[in-house]
Length: 185
Image 1 (cartoon, rainbow, N blue to C red):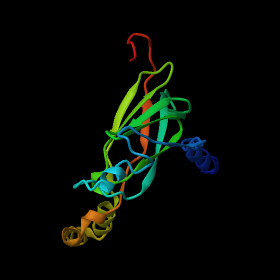
Image 2: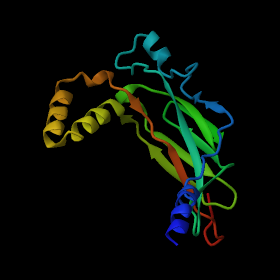
Image 3: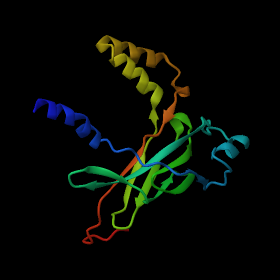
Image 4: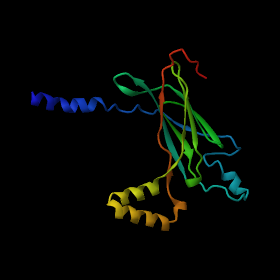
């Protein structure tokens, strides 16, 4: 009996780990402020405006749609239409998707993500960029205990955090089935 249970453990472990659906294409943003290209603030910098965010590159933000299936948890599905937008740009893609968005370190815009799919209620979330450099610093320090964390906080306080790397998290959209009792908008 013990051998039987041990033989089944790898099978049981693998059944809970579904492979993510493959993304077929990359969607570029469409600036809505008159800009050209991914750096939506470039024209303002070239015009000499003060306080314009420094362009720090771009990121492919993943947008994935899931539905809760009884007994299976959240299962990814393809075909939800999603809009990723900020004050300066928007993009529309079909899940699973990767949307190329600009990064401006600590001045990157919060993203609004809205997804819709037939048979499901619409869903909206916001994605704020994370200071990855600071997170790594704290993570490394906390791995060394309380003294390590204190040292990481001290190093962080002495660091020039204006050049830190910022990244957006995955847009994980869990859509609820529309039972017909509530109208979607």
